[in-house]
Image 1 (tube, rainbow, N blue to C red):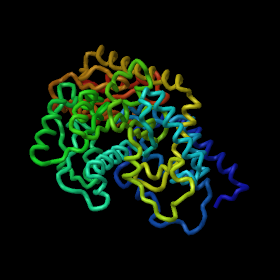
Image 2: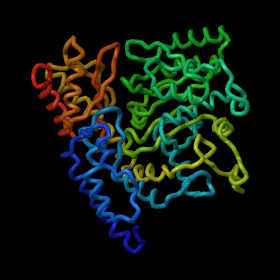
Image 3: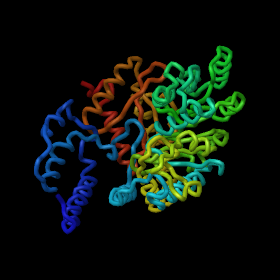
Image 4: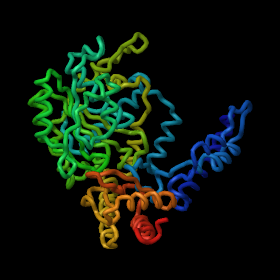
Amino acid sequence: MIKRENFRAEADRIIDWIDDYFEKLKQLPVKSRAKPREIYDNIPSKAPHLSEGIEAIIKDLDSIIMPGITHWQHPSFHAYFPANSSYESLLGEMVTAAIGAQCMVWETSPAAAELEQRMMEWMADASGLPSAFSGVIQDSASSATLVAIITARERATQFKSNLEGVPSGLRVYCSSEAHSSIEKGVGVAGIGRNNLVKIETDSDQRMIPSQLEKAICDDVAAGFIPICVVAALGTTGTVAIDPIAEIATICKKYNVWLHVDGAYAGTALLLPEHRHIGNGIEHADSFVFNPHKWMFVNFDCSLYYVKDSQLLVRTFDILPEYLKTATRGQVNDYRDWGIPLGRRFRALKLWFVLRGFGLEGIRQRVREQILLNEYFAEQISQSGHFEILKPPFLGFTLFCVRSEDDSISEKLLSTINASGEVYLSHTKVNGRFAIRFHSAQTYVQKEDIDKVVEVLNRFKYGNKIT
């Protein structure tokens, strides 16, 4: 066990380890090559009875744990969406861990509650959101969407669902391209996954408003109660932007809650030249985006905004005697703004990043990554071996091998990922196998994009796929 007088010496070992990790990160295989149960079988079946020193722990960290790590901060990680970090965020997280505050109500750490409130205001202003929005930091967009669905449920049932149980016949709507967390949230909220209506999309994978209105009208005629629409400000598969303004008009007409999920693409609202992608968002009831995806704040940090915070609080407020405080009503007790009672001090790392980068520093880095994505798309197009399936958008490109045989693209992806040199992921677009690429790693540079292009060309169809 580490004693106070030994803490600095032991901590220095960890700082050295972290510094060495970043130094050698580019040389590591980006994707773990571990086989199922390989890590598990190398961990003793019983916990140690006696104290073990940091030196022994670090030795096993290197030999047992690290071979099973896929390196999300690696500049060759271009799969899924990013889960970015930064040196500023890491330092803020270290301070958060040292303080170890449980930030459930204002009384348990006034600075945590008030910094969170101010950070939500800073980000709303920087993103051009209307002043009517107020917000709270959630752990993920999945949780924020669940909160939105539950709040919509309570509003539609005059807050009886929390007391009496969820009535049958409630309906939620999203596009067929929307994130799976919506379907999961509808199930968890007690509405039932069969009551999630998936709306057809157009050729650009955007929800078709006329189809949404038809679905709502048909449901009303059949005796269902439409309660919530989830629109995408950037779908996971293709970063499609639903027509939010048109959807908002329909939601207002039928008194349906509109939640906008901008988990990844929402960061682009920081850039005035891209703010048009959020047209209509001012009419939404709630909105979420994740600084832990594209704003260099490490996971988890998801910003959830709501027009009527009193509806939110009324939905989640439970006040046992041991949580009653003299300041209630004067401050934000954020445990009433979401599902968990216990809350981490997430605002601190966001504050570190905003202070360390500055808004202009963040904007500059995001713009650079957008240009790197355009450069990537140009390079693979010029090779003649690849087809761009959608024009490069923000930090995202969708492509495939130029072939009518989808298995070639699938084999290429598998081969590249197994090599450990680059990590990419896939989706399907109109039935076609498509490779997804993002250029949004915090410290990615042109040379890292050139590496992806080189690897793709080296393993291209007709060459070194085995």
